[in-house]
Image (cartoon, rainbow, N blue to C red; front, side, top):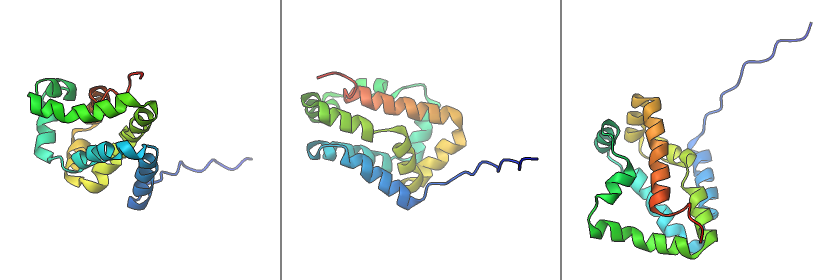
Length: 146
């Protein structure tokens, strides 16, 4: 009689593995664009749990919020968009680095208050987070061809 299969082993990500993964993705981004990608991660680390709760409770997407911003807020994105438009390599690296996995781990390890909010809201919050990342990619024009 064959031995029973072992139960599935769940591996958890440690802070060290998270930092290694994040550094791997950042190395994929050309030096000229790393500042903008790092700004994204700084933005994620600086989110306020109450603002995230408001965002989750409201139906607005990040793209809709961005489109309602005034000129100074929108022009702040223009430099990153111009750099991304100028190079397929920059676009591909930034697109690879700004992803759901690293965003979740950044929240989990560097902004635990927001991570708790997202976990408390459940699957709908993770879906909205994924949509938010897609919106950021659209705003930065990461999916367009040069």
